[in-house]
Amino acid sequence: MNTLLSRSGGAGPLPAQSPPCVLVADDEDALRMILTRELRKRGFDVYSTGSGAEAVEMYCRSPIRIDVVLMDVNMPGVSGPDALDAIRAVDPFVRCCFMTADDRPGRHAALLARGAAAVFGKPFASVKDVCETLKQIAGETFGESDSMVEGGAKWTS
Image 1 (tube, helix red, strand yellow):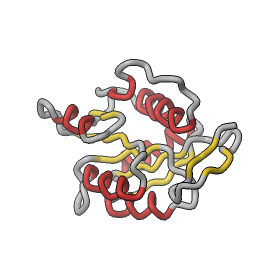
Image 2 (cartoon, helix red, strand yellow):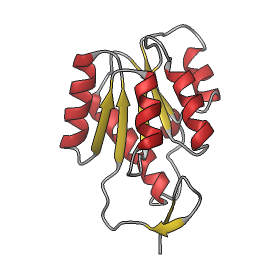
Image 3 (cartoon, one colour):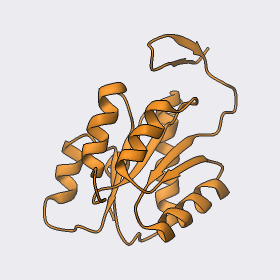
């Protein structure tokens, strides 16, 4: 039987057929709304917020399991990487993907080294590819996938 480890450390049964849940954090309203709509169309449960500080709050206080956080790197106040650090203080196993328009050499590699499961360049080459990668990463949190396709966890556009 698959089990879910709660943030408090206890194990409980994994709900059957539970859709993956994604927390989207981006200060660009239009992009956040598009991602939310597209993820929901593809079967995800979605929470969304416009700041890193709110993402930390939502993740840490959520009554349900959030499988993947999709977060912008550059947001006013608390940046995506700083928000990830705060979430990791509560859940060291959080799965986080970053999105950024910063295409300086080494930037994506630095975010991956910081613990991101994937880094997506903005603008996205394909929202469908983003959704598929998130579904694959969320599947790993359930143990549904034996392994990721090589490079899949580090997909960049």
